[in-house]
Image (cartoon, rainbow, N blue to C red):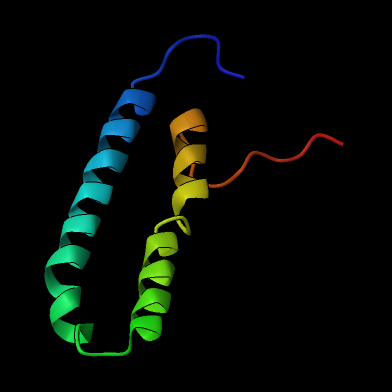
Length: 77
């Protein structure tokens, strides 16, 4: 456990917000042109997948914000 505040948390939060903003703008800007004519159910599935895919790297990013390492700390048995 860390005892003192670290710069990684505010920088990480700002980075996460900026990355999500860029990701959302790219999806909103380019995807409708590609799949706009497809069936609504197919579009729904694609948007659901893309809405959840940003969660994949989130665990390691949060670990870095807390510990400064990209991998989880060893478990204490």
